[in-house]
Amino acid sequence: MLPSASRSGRRRAVALASLAAPPLAAILALAGTAFGQARGLAPAGTQPTAPAQPAAKPQEEPRFGAIRPELQPVVELADQPVRLDSVALTFFPPTDCTVQTTSVAGVATIEIMPRDSTADSTWLLTIKAPRTGNDKLTAAQIADGALVDLIAANGLVFDAERGLKGPQIKDMWQKNEITSVGNFLGYQGLVQSRHRDVEFPGFPTKAEQFFVSLPSGAKQEPLMRGLTVVKVGPDRFITFELFTTRPFFEQAKDIYTVLLHAAKVGDPAALAEERANAVNAGLALFEKLTAEEMKQLLADLASKTKNGSGERWERRYKPAPSRNPMDATELGYRRMKVWSGKRGELKANPVPARFNNVEMQDGYLVTLDARLVEDNQIIDSRGRFFVTTDRVEEAWTISLSVQGLDHKNRKTYTETGARNGKDMNVNVAGAGNPGVAALPIIETAGYISRVDSYLLPQILIRSKLAGDYGFYVFQSDAGNIRLRRDVLSEPSDRPDMWEIETRIGEDAKPQISMYTREGVLISSVLPDKSVWEPIEQDALVRLWRNKGMPMD
Image 1 (cartoon, rainbow, N blue to C red):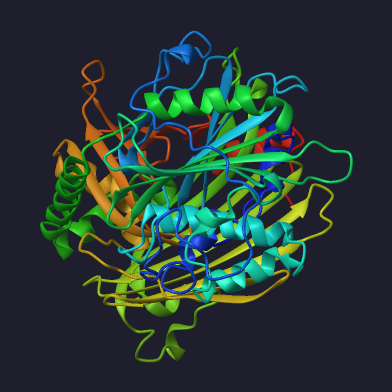
Image 2: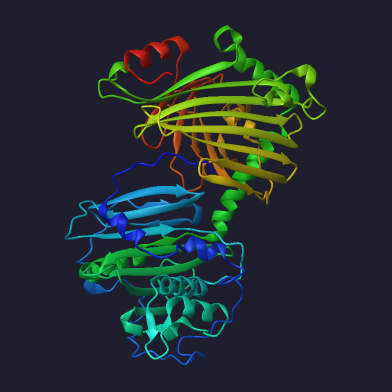
């Protein structure tokens, strides 16, 4: 996964998460090893093989079949729901809270925290929908595995006579010497409660839950953690994590409980059918696209550029209330070119006379050069993409440079990828990175090349078939293959235009783009309300120079 600049100034509540031990993603990644194999976990109450015994077990709270009446007046929920589309999750966050969605390695994370996160109200709630490669993994195994990791990471002593510590507990767990995390209840007050088979009205299966108290340093209040795990598909889970400190635990737990009871997961079968219909529509689109039509599409694109060069320049900016370009905030620009050519043209300085047999392959090429300026950094990228005319093979190279506005502390990264049929390999290397190789798996039909992903708007518009389309494509920011959704429509108030709503991932916010009837971009509005818009190169240079933007 290529790195990207991140925004600073996160709220205090986010710092709570950094005090947590290993993330759940690590547990899922271990599926099939430490936690993933069918371990035959013993139910709560089974005697452990280790001699250590808990001092006293806390009382199990009653399972909730509905929101506890005493909580209803305490927590007020927002009128508008938040959705996590990949698992058809709908929930209503508390009022006076901020809700932020981020994505790391293709896994969306929803973060909920108080709008005014002061010393009087510090908590963080995160929601994720991770996948696992082991369809036999259960919610109980994930919850127990997370609890063991928390125990191990904090190195607490559980048996004063033997000096048994967290890492030893984890080792015993992995060796099946301890078969139930339920046996840890009560150790030095660490585990507050462990609830099994919890019923929530809107969940398709019973959930697993625990609350735990962790040390956070001398003279500091303990960190309180809560985790609820529900399995919503053969390889899919939803996790709800609570982070707070002891003084705010009861208040935060009430909010957490109400949100869980107000959440609803849609029908997995209906979701799978909708996804399949979109992918089938995408398959049909490309099955009808002939080589002659592709050739004409590229020719049409070139004819609509200056001097027929095929180069398109676009500017990214945040509009100003005055709508005056000089008042807008400049964020970046990019140059794209598409054409038919040889694979050898991927090279920076190709010499056709020296192309070998592989480099002589016919295909379609895209080059994309871009500069973004954000968070006092200059981010430059250069991408070269190729796919054969039969779309059986593809290759690409991407270089990325990140430096300060003073052009110091420059770091560079590269990504190279190649595919032959369903076999793909991707390599990423760069500053402080010894190199990472990946073999993304193309598990299903509906995959399209990276070249085709850049040409999708024109391919869709050329079909003149409004509808919902789905495509699997490798995405550098995620470092893997994700489902992209595109909805083509004809706005009733703009009959001379096409609108395309794009989600680069199932849980990504939509990007709304407007095109002419001929497929020429008018504008593209990103989720952060910034805009990509066509511009001539000389006009871009004048604008950036007048604003003192970095051009060198």
